[in-house]
Amino acid sequence: MILTLAREHSLAGKMSSNQAYYVRGWVVGAVATAYLKVRETDIATPQQTETIANWMRGVGVQTKGYYDAHKKMGDGDSQNNHLYWAGVELAAIGAAANNRKDVDWAIATYDNGVNQIRSDGTLPLEMARGTRALHYHLYALAPLVPLAEFGEANDLDLYAHASGAIHRLVSFSVGGLQDTTPFAKATGVHRSCQRQ
Image (tube, rainbow, N blue to C red):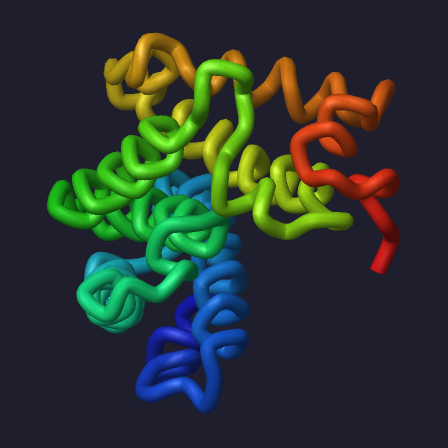
């Protein structure tokens, strides 16, 4: 199935909306992660492996281009949870396609996230979500932990970056599931997490 995606250049090219770029990143990141689990089985020929790697690298170039352009424009999605999810995509692509530049880009997205974590464990861009601040803190945390784990797998202690800030984010976010009061105080709204 992955080879078919690669041969057809699936999910490549200009996307129709910002949301389409996000979804492509989630899908390709998941595909690259799945590929990492079977790559060492030699199920694919060297030529098939190269086809898959080239496709992943190509999609990765497009993802980096999207976020790098949005960063220059100062768009929020170039700094918030969307960027961290793109980091997971590029970490998986970099590992699967043996491209260190993609892994480095992914680590930079992780650093971008953990460097924003305040001393109380909050992320300012996600706190700005008002009634959905808790939801978005959890949603931002979800890609940061796998990025830290990619680092661990490559002998990089990303959990220690920014003086271990991710631990504050975990504590604050998971704590919010038990008691939303800190989110309510910080955002000025009484419901900090609502179902969509």
